[in-house]
Image (cartoon, rainbow over all chains, first blue to last red; front, side):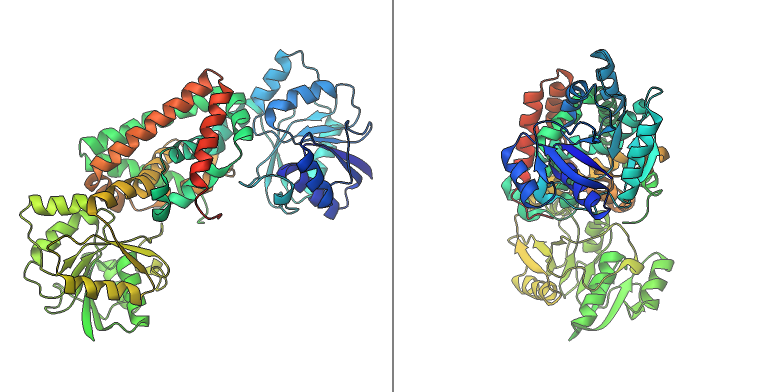
Length: 273
Length: 273
């Protein structure tokens, strides 16, 4: 058993730490956390044993910081000998930025994206069951150390997650559609909401706007990093919306019903929920 | 105690019938239902006692048909003496269409909109608790019979709902924003979904697309009837989306973060869920 250092003691870092404790994965868990209030809560709640300035020399490092700080941390940890893994929601674009900056990273860097989260953030929202029965996408490249990959895969599996490998560019394309665009649309939708609307929030509003309460700092970083794939799927969304508007404006109810029926059919592959 | 006739034995009609039975509101419940399969299920499940061709002469009538058939039914029931109430999600535009066609309606017509529903439809999805602790908006006009209004309000209250009065035009404007636009956006979003995406459906996708499984016939009618208010809020949505796209394209992270923070603040009036 070894130690672990979290870089970032937020929802994801502290949930990983809490889950790892239950699974008895590490002897000692430390955290690098620039926000003193978050550091104090992570300690007080027992998610971490110590707040430190630098990751422990030979311990695995979980980079649970906002995705726009991952590349800088990889450079800083270039000489690190143990596995280093991130949780950023963007993978191909992150690796491209890494290469563009000279490719400075530790030999044991394993790119990861756990498909888990919630709107609340910080150590108080942490949940040891956050990764159970969830998917974790890994996007190793040809020069990723297979031993480090195997170690990191075992960590996620010990937390109850299913690990799947994807091509990093394909990952960004798929998650632009299934996660980043829904968040962008939910935020956009909320910009039109006035307080008078909140009383009348049945009929889809709550579902639709729940994810709009997510963290601005985190989502700004994701939108910026995955901008190419996100702008592409957003342009397609706008084209489909214009089809709908044309049908509604011209009172072409047959066209409108066709569009809705097609939309509905595309969702039917999902389990009822 | 009197009888009740449903026009339309779908989710809303059968849920009302089932709830009314539990509350012991009516002696006998009949239904006009053009779809033989739905009529048979409504009978078999005991939601209704009889399937009929015409509403019973002196009994209240619940128009639980798609909203684009309400005006025709009001004309057909012009001489009806008992209260007649609908459940259409559009009110001002429906009353305007009614007036434009000569205003043929029974004296006891009370326009209603229960804020309750689900994606599944038909008698099998009916739930006697569907209206409990839900809002029912009524939009009586100056010539609505106050006695009929009082009777219909008591029906909804007996089912556990809270009844509130709104101006019909204001109703359409508010629900275009809180219900019709979210459905339009969910349908539009789903048009871009391919089967490969369904496996990667964490991170907002499920929430966002759940309402996209709603009934095409019903939603086509709502979009067509409330087209003016819907097109207006959709144009505002497009303008806000263009603000976001401009910030992401120009990599103006400060602007992007400001937009997300504003969106989030607008949702904070809602209870956590």
